[in-house]
Image (cartoon, rainbow over the protein chains, first blue to last red):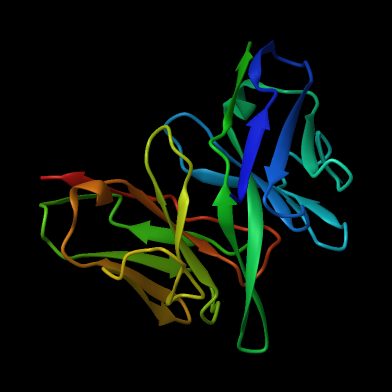
Length: 122
Length: 108
């Protein structure tokens, strides 16, 4: 079965750090993403790991969060530093799929984890 | 950045109804739009990609249409399990990879 399982969430103080993990099964990690949902808010893209290894971030986390991929353990990580109340959210790990459309690939998230909750107390 | 604006924010409907959810992009994004269903406490699910392609295993009562800046997700004959929040997402550019704010479909 293709699935991803997140872990590492918890309650921490403002300014502290936390590392989330995501173990994949049923496929090899390549294109992967982190998406979050703050309380009573919508989905927000956080980070994207490209197949070739390039990693991009939302402006709201750039410079504070670092995503990484370990192909040997089929795991991705999200290192979160300098956390603030605005980072309180459910964090979802996701597999990125693709389909050729028009003259290039179209990308989408075809496998989502159940999420891990991060609560930052001020 | 490409902004995605969904309407309405809330939609009340009954089992058996057909509903249309709309999503407007702030610029031409061809047909690079995905639609997701999200229920509280559960992982989101991909419904549609490339504006109109039905993801594997998704019931045929879901369909997507549109191109350019205006897109629609149609749910025909609402089932009880379809009451959820629906998000569009543009994939014209992955930086940033933006979602709409969501449309919550509620039971009337």
